[in-house]
Image 1 (tube, helix red, strand yellow):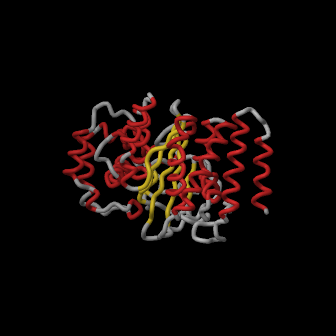
Image 2 (cartoon, one colour):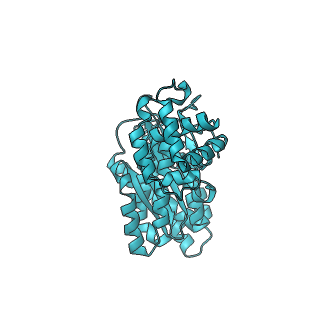
Image 3 (tube, helix red, strand yellow):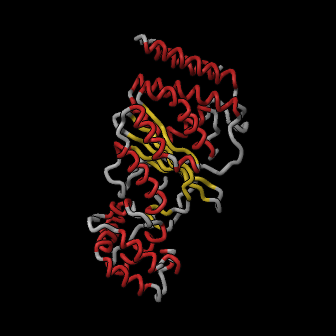
Length: 358
């Protein structure tokens, strides 16, 4: 998995003022359009899935680098920009923060019906990445933001964010379809976090968890053995490193869940399709797999900037509206020239540095 350093994302209160968000939408629209014109849709998604590039984009749009609100606001600006631009360039975005994230399947259906795009695979992708970052990777950050950006031919990128309210920090998870060989083995493009924890509760998507993944899949195939071993564990002293609590080993709930497990479950990735298999049950499965098969899971933390227009809360300096507006106009002119075939757009972009330096 790609690692390019750390991005500090402490939680801040407040939101972008309307005058700034309006400009963020305009500027992000121009940036997106120019990237697609110059490099294509795939490169746009590749860049959005790069946590460092995404953080830099937020700085360009006017969010200071250490603001956790950068994720939700930048995604909001991109989504708003793609409402009218998306059909033109063949790129769309769904999802968002809180309850909006839960409406992702409905949004996908609407876009699919309107533009004749098969979105069934994308709905499955949305469910899988959310389950990976909430159940298979248990790092102490509760997901509250989920966005999926995709092209008409089916390429996709995901940006998710989780919050650790106790420590007051957020963590952002990036995915890119072209680099996902497996949803359960080192699937992320990158993860931005303030700190690299010495140990997390569980990391079943780590390379070194391969044996544990196979053991859990075997347990799901042998339901009687699984129920029997969980019953034994309830009277044993649990290893401290697993963070297993008595309520995690609910035999009744386990039996009910196993009754819904289809016989066709063949490998660990099938766990992403099972309803009722959340963080607690995954921890219990990992513990049983270690006790029965000696397959130890990983507890390794997988996580591993710039200013252009200032920050929304005045740090490191207030947003300079005249420079911001000049940037938008410069990009618009570059795009117009690109559309009529003039190669001077490159020189137009170079003039951006002169404007920002003035």
